[in-house]
Image (cartoon, rainbow, N blue to C red; front, side, top):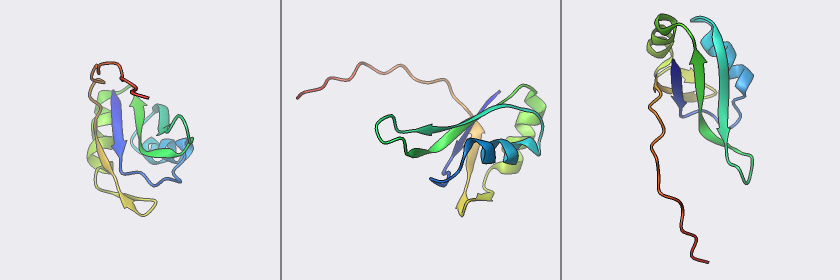
Amino acid sequence: MEIYVGNLSWSTSDQELTDAFAAYGNVEKASIISDRDSGRSKGFGFVTMNDDDEANKAIEGMNGTEMGGRNLKVNEARPREDRPPRQDNW
């Protein structure tokens, strides 16, 4: 199951995210999403856990908890919506 983690501190690392969710089970992958131009964190990321029971416990346990001075928003990730291509009007 892929888990969305929002309201992350800009300084949160992939490893910190992995460590926080590892308390609930095996974390296959954790990644913070960064801006492609600046490289700065966008303040959200995704955690992948293979066991749905562990993932649901992680969602329940981590949602609303404080990490890096901010209260996390944690839920099951939804599939990315298809968006029309950007029209650059330069």
